[in-house]
Image 1 (cartoon, one colour):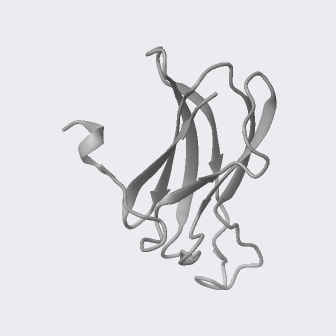
Image 2 (tube, helix red, strand yellow; image 1 turned 90 degrees about the horizontal axis):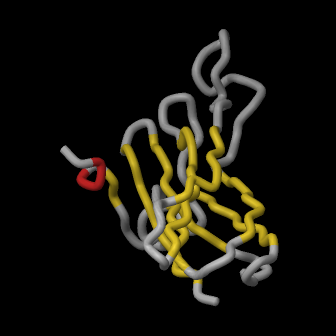
Length: 129
């Protein structure tokens, strides 16, 4: 089964698992820009021992047809686990990642997130210079 059949997508305003790609200061060709990717922007995603976002990856597909580039990955490893029981731990992580990247051509940013219960989710944003 191709991985594309395993990845889901939807509108982030109605689905809490979809990664949201934001470029707060915009993107300029040849300049480093901050790209933020989060899960649960409109509808918060649970962050519990039982149900959590494990990671977010960001990719870039150049318009020229070159291969996809993996720009980075953030893992979220604290979800309230403790020897005292589930959700009694002292540390939690929130699924938000920042990537500082420089793009030299137009293309598409693709974010993929992983929920331990609901699997893989993706979204994309076109970048045009």
